[in-house]
Amino acid sequence: MRYVVGCDHAGLPLKAPLIAELEMRGHEVHDIGTDSPESVDYPLFAAVAAAAVRDGRADRGLLICGTGLGMALTANRFERVRAVTVSEPFSARMARAHNDANVLCMGARVVGPGLALEILGAWLDQEFEGGRHQARVDMVMRPEGGLER
Image (cartoon, rainbow, N blue to C red; front, top):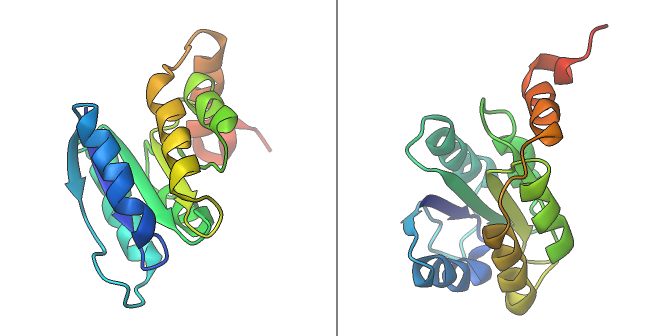
């Protein structure tokens, strides 16, 4: 599977171990940066990653900033992207099983390297269950959540 991985300056400490885990599992990784502790704007990295997922240049994405929240907010503005911010393994599994999340966001100021690896592993090991969950994912992906006003 092809992964696009990006971070801002706050997420930099988690990026290398998470990329190493993806590569150890045989995934192709495209690292879009940042590679420096100098302050950068997280939306720029989230947008590049989300566009890669949207356009099919990557199957999934991994984004890391201070909290993971800004990355997810930015990524979810892109069509076909279902980004989630996760800080423990159960939510990572459920994000894949029920929501078919294709972009995982984490906060380096929220989780340390050990927990981040557990979260990534739970997300990677869980398949989307489909079935009744597919109809809900389809609703989420429609404008305004598929809800009529």
